[in-house]
Structure formats: structure tokens, C-alpha cells
Image 1: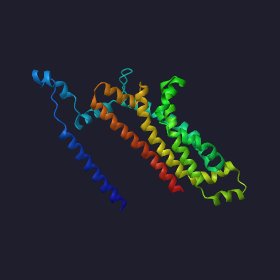
Image 2 (image 1 turned 120 degrees about the vertical axis):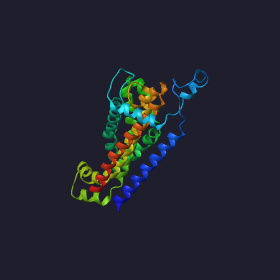
Image 3 (image 1 turned 135 degrees about the horizontal axis):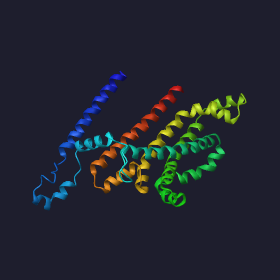
Image 4 (image 1 turned 45 degrees about the vertical axis):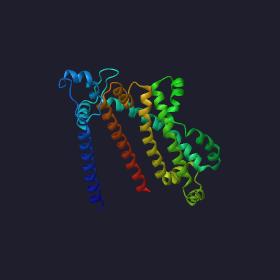
Length: 276
């Protein structure tokens, strides 16, 4: 039954995709090349004709060009999509794992200690609503390095979902399990690893999954600000070149990579829930 439902859903998704691409292709006006235009058309409307949203056939053609050689490097402003994605993923994962190293232990501390929860909650409530990009000017001023500043912004945006979900998961562990650990004279550290961590793991992984999605969203905007390399810079650079075909291709690439990151953490989440 489940396999049949998945097959039907896949068929419906493919049909919707084909319909959407066909509609997009059909509604996109045909644009003449410069060789096909008359002299009058070039004088009166040639420039306007070129400034149109490209059809999906052009985007697919550009995707084939980019993906056939994704790691070329022709200088600072001309790198393949694979190199740009590698820079972005490096920044995302570096900031993300730094955030995990801090958020998860602090989340445990908050979840296990009502005193620390009350002491740290005002700071969390003040810092959490601040847009990660608002930290970028300060980071650039203090760190004086664009790549490290981008990693710092990812760190800031990743830390809160992990910290809050960890604290929530730890605080939600059944008290009788903790009491049993105490009767067996387990220390706080051993109790945290052997009792609380397995019980809170699904909630912690949910926070990590939310964080990776936010981090991937933020890196695009951060790279538009700092420039140089990365998928966000690629989008902005192609817009400055008025190459809408490459812009649309890069937007779709961002979506596909984000989907793959979420799918990876989704598998981890299911594995943790299954073990529970």
C-alpha cells in the first residue's frame, strides 16, 4: 500500500512538473536574435526584447553547460557552479558544526537545571530574534575577513534552533527515568549520556534539521553581501551580468542542494526515532 502510494505521488509530481514547464515555455514570448531582427526592430525594441524571462528550454541548456564542467576556474569572477557550491557548503558546515558544539551542551545545561534556564532565558530571548545578517557589519569590522564573517553569521543563525530544541527535549525526559539513574548512583555526566541523550535525541535532531535549513537560506544572502565566492555571489554576479538564465539555474540549484541537505537530516531523524 505504501509503495503504491509513493508511486502514484511520483507520477503526479512528474505530471505537474511537465505541465508547469510546458505552461512556462508556452507563455514565454519568442525572442529574436540580433541576426533575425530588422534594423528598425534593433533601433526600436531590440533591447526590450532581450530583457525577458527565459523559457525553461534555455535554463535546461544552461544547466547542461554548467553541470558538464562544474569545476572550471577562469579567474575570480568566472568559476564553475561546483566550486561555488563547495565554498558555500564549507561555510555552512563550518558555522553549523561550531554552533552544534556550543548549542547542544548549553541546551543540556538549560534543560537539566531550572536555575540556568531562568538565568540564560533573558539573553536567549533578546539575541534570538536578531536577524543573522544584522551581525554581518559588526563581524566584518571585528574579524576583518569576509569568509570568517560569513561562517560567524551561519554560526549565529544555526545555534538557536539547536539550543532551544535540545533544552526542550532534555527538559521533557520523564522524571522517573532520571530518578532511576539517581537510585543507581549515576553521576550527572553519565546520566546525561546514558539516560537523557537517547530519550532527547529525536528532539535534538529535529533542531539540527531546522538549523541546517536556516543556515542554507542565510548563506545565500550573506554571500551576496560579502562577495567573492559562493552560490550567493554567483547569483548576484549573474544578475549584474543581466544573465537571467544563469540566475534561474542557480536558484533551482540552491533549492536542490537545500532539499538534499534536508533529506540527509531527515534520514538521520528517522533512524534516531526508529532506535528509540
